[in-house]
Length: 394
Ligand SMILES: *Cc1c(COP(=O)(O)O)cnc(C)c1O
Image (cartoon, rainbow, N blue to C red; front, side, top):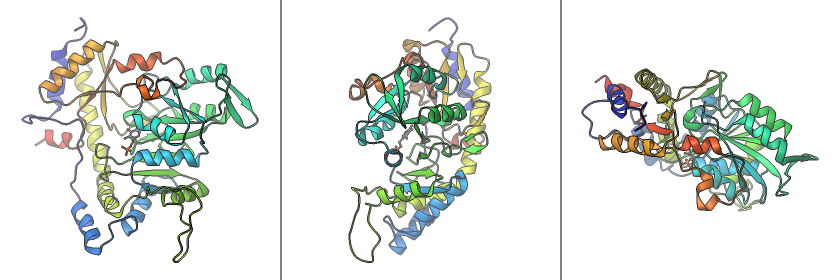
């Protein structure tokens, strides 16, 4: 261990926050404490289990009410939400799409599903989100505007869109990013998969990109088993998203006519039923997670060599996954910390392998990624379930 970093102090800090007498504390587990059973039973009793049924619409209405977005389209998972968001944003085969290398693989996969090319950008250390200032400098060198298109001078391809991902629920600084997108004619898509319940300057994330995606996978802040939602404030885009996610079938009492190669991406009623019950508990989850993050922050505040990742001043974060950031990038120290915490039953994890390192994305265009490469060796995620705060009081 490096001199400044005392692993026993880190363990002690975690022990002071987390519940005692548990053999294993997961990184993130779902909490089902509401009407889940009743709503799912209702689906089974009435036979409405698939993609038509009142829970899907109810869920969408509650999502718009909670996020403030005008339209919500419920889909089978967050990756599908991203895929459709990109298509509706006009991303086509052989376009390039800018996205951080420090994200979950689904962000790049969705780009690939469109036949487009991921173009990786660096992150900054305050939010672990993309570095707008560095990107601005980079685009100044590699991009050229041609009519209404942004062209990569080196590959000749059109750079159509940019995906901003709100890492672990901490919002990216969106105002300067929006300005940059406008200047370079880039469509902004928000990968808000991790950020339900996070606000940028008092407005819920997912309202800034023309299209946005949220995930309800089992490990996210609330779950539908598997599920996702597309958010937008523009009616034609919402209509197209709904159309494409429901096999692009033209309305008719009995005929099967389809005007696009659509997708079977609609969220089933069963999953939406779970989601409705989860949404009723979301304010409580958010409160518990903020309280847990507060405890972590205090416990780690006196320890040299590490910083607990806190929300940026302009935002309110959902603290989906808590993260400890080592002051110095050191893979060996990070791995040792991961080992000793997991050995005593505290499930901790590193952040994702940077996407440009994966063989499947190795050949994609990329800017200098030195900060993300350092962050990769500095981040350790901590147990973050909403029930941890409550359990500690038992
Ligand atoms: C979870 C996640 C997704 C994908 O969501 P799924 O519902 O699992 O498909 C996409 N991007 C990020 C950043 C995520 O964390």
